[in-house]
Image (cartoon, rainbow, N blue to C red; front, side, top):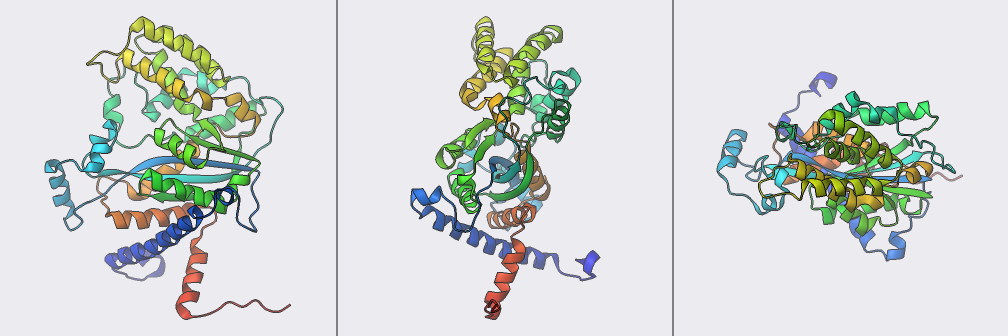
Length: 409
């Protein structure tokens, strides 16, 4: 404001206004959710009057990270110092093991991305051959490193790399588009995107996403998909609210697990041909073949033993095998490509990164109220159809007592 409007405003005043307006938007959102969940089931799977269902509707969800300060009256230095001494809270006890080491204040925010897309439905798989980028050693090494999910035994630094949530490399969508052009295959393109975000628990977050999907007519779309990584939170939300959507496991995460297992306890010269064989099957939807060879590999190494770390070959292979077995019904990639559906969750991963740019940082601490308000406003600003102008107009009309009248024809 000082730079663009030559207007000096106290930072604390901006914070208070932001939290107040964000809370108003949260109240509107929560009221809409209550109205939605009170509808009969048949109505909840329909659409509002006057809304046209899109041809292709895609929903993706994931979690980000931000720091919540329980003792909001403490200074930042005092908060950081007290974190080292404080006992774990109930929420922290419930966090996955890979989250608890990040400190008392790191918490998860939930991000939902709802997209309308443009694509063509084909009679056959438009890209049956795996793109060359996914069998290029230099590019796969980079992807595996950036995803921070590889657990091969020859990568000792993997534990040190995980500082935040897993973020999809921006290169992924570019790779798919570039390789698709070579074989005359065009991955689906985003037409509009709508976002929602919260600090509330996953069972509360689900109805928020479903309410937004209902207002957009997503449940009556001709083709609809729900895409995500292997997190159980994602698929529990899918089962509760989007079971009529085609479930799709992000192929990039699947590739990273396959690569890690193929290179575990093997020199690169032996592991790479195994990876190429497995990833080719994966791309072609023949995940059962990969599972069979992984099971054989696990039998050779034996089950994980007590004391095996995350990077031990036995643990790497067992983790990859369990991952593919749990999600094999969501890995029919040739069918998804034929239907013109996305096969990567890079869209929602990118959205998480955009939220993180605003709320995540080692020096950024939020109260629960402030975080919820800011997450809602951030979702508004990142949505294609920014709802804030209509909100401001409605707020002004309500505050001034004005009534809108349509002019007679």
